[in-house]
Length: 550
Image (cartoon, rainbow, N blue to C red; front, side, top):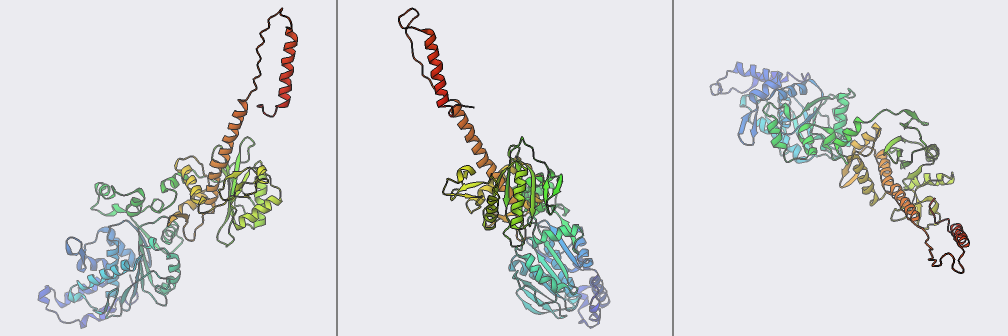
């Protein structure tokens, strides 16, 4: 129960205006008893006196379902509430009813509503106002004293207003209740929360409700931390089937024209499958089931995870994404078994440029002098230069502009070759598409939970694949580069080598002369003729031995 100012309205009851009680078939004594009962129990108040506007039936009494009644109790019993909900459950409406109860039966309550759009927030305020105006006259122990389009104030000092999601929303106010509608869909919610939290620190309450929108956003973090007991939020999960009047047939009819992502978002309360992730949620879940703890946690910071040691019979490629140095990103690399498409080791940490270059040098040599592919951004190029100075023999080179792979031994004589892999607006979609293709077709084995967790927050943002706000994509980009290089440079070069071998293996020299002489004919010498043929063949082999196979 709300403790502060909870029974203040009792003092108001003796002074209420005398009504024509015969009109309501209720005496003044009964009025007083009903007001006291409603003030103590929001569920009783809502079910007996609140009316809502039904889109088809018009104005109807609000009769709560069990899950809605439970939600009213949770709002009253917990200071912080976060509700993961499906659509069409009336959660915004029941929240509006609770807001009305708080305003009616408490003095000087300051309530702020924010949502994805100002119009959405103001609609909730309008719901509260409509419920207020449709109460019986004798139940309205406080009147609307100030009435605006997106706000109103009662005669007892309680007020509510809608606000946009600007950075200064709610600042310099002391809030009694903050309602955040569709919290997962508010882009800058992390920044908003930083500004809003001080406004409720003196005892204010929070109700955050939303359908899911992927993982990594503020709403997902609040839900996850609540489950883990890492914050003060009380979480409620309300999928579509909590509604007693909805069955499987209803669900199938409602979702028949929706995609899997839309169903997960609007009805199933599934974080993983609901977001605009580049990698489909089902594929991410499949990969996560195959993750395993590393065999070794090595390196100077123990962030070098190894699942399989070097095997001389295998060929590897090492791809690296170097941190920009802004303190938030990580330097990362993957070691991939080229033939089996298995990640045998990975690293993600924050070493200095010098230390990362030395680390790559040692790891590359440890895995048999593997091809080392480093993204050649500003700091990446610095790492590449240090590796060249350390005389690492197998660095990835490409043609400037086209990005075509060049063998390191040819790079010195190719004027337009550059060391490293260039990630540009042209190449980025290609390497991400290759990663998605490998994952979708279940061609690659990823053992690391770190990498999989980055995929959960790797989303489409205005058509660009990138990490969600305040999240990282270093391991994802490193892995994408490995997939691209493996399927283009390495496999293509291996195919070209096979073509060359087949071409050379099929070459031979034919120098056949028809000798029409027969034994006994003048000038015929069988032994000398055979020796001449052997001598010619030996001479040709010595002269053209570089052409022959083997």
